[in-house]
Length: 290
Image 1 (cartoon, rainbow, N blue to C red):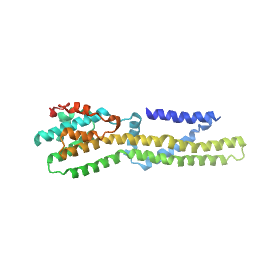
Image 2 (cartoon, helix red, strand yellow; image 1 turned 90 degrees about the vertical axis):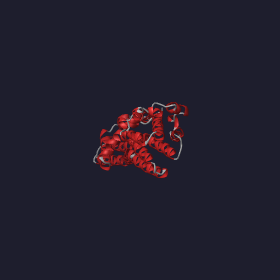
Image 3 (cartoon, helix red, strand yellow; image 1 turned 180 degrees about the horizontal axis):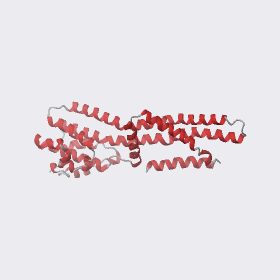
Image 4 (spheres, rainbow, N blue to C red; image 1 turned 120 degrees about the horizontal axis):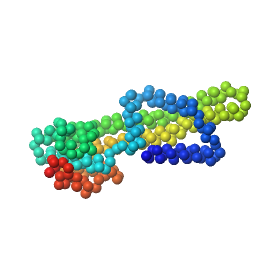
């Protein structure tokens, strides 16, 4: 919704100001200039990126429009799941705990937190490092370094659409110049025409430069920033898991360890201490914490 409102404000202000200065909107409507600029932009985008990135960029754009990212309840559910798992690790023998990590889709603990269970990559991340904790001889600083490396790799992959869209945004002003040059070439073929006709052709050519600059700085660049923000928020749960499990490995009690994770949640999405306690003490929603 924010993207749509922003575009309405930007385009409305631009067109309204142009009309207020005495301009005629029909002059800006040069459909073949749009075809040239956005066609070249689409072509260079496909050339520069693998098919997976092209498809993921479409998905990331839709996520940016809908603001699809973890919300307050998702973070609260994640903390509740981690608390339940840490209680299991602390109080149950290894053979009873392993079943949760070997087959999380059948685990009653994971089933009790569907907000987390619906993200397979996140579940796999939790299970992998809980297995390492279960082994018992892993050093916390080594696990932390491994986590940071994996989180960095995951974040780099998630931000590829941002880089791809931003690259096209940076190229759009130059593509607008290409369209303008082609328009000038066309105008040069009409030098024997009246000044009125020639002026119209030159004006139409300059619209290409306007389209390229506006589409770059007024549309695609802000969209790329929005995509980056949404994708970074989607990566936040991994950092929360890291902080929580490392605190647990360093000797913190489960209730204290999840406080380390809670501090990694920013802004209005961060649950209060009372909300976290309500979800985890005296047992939250997981039978393991009973």
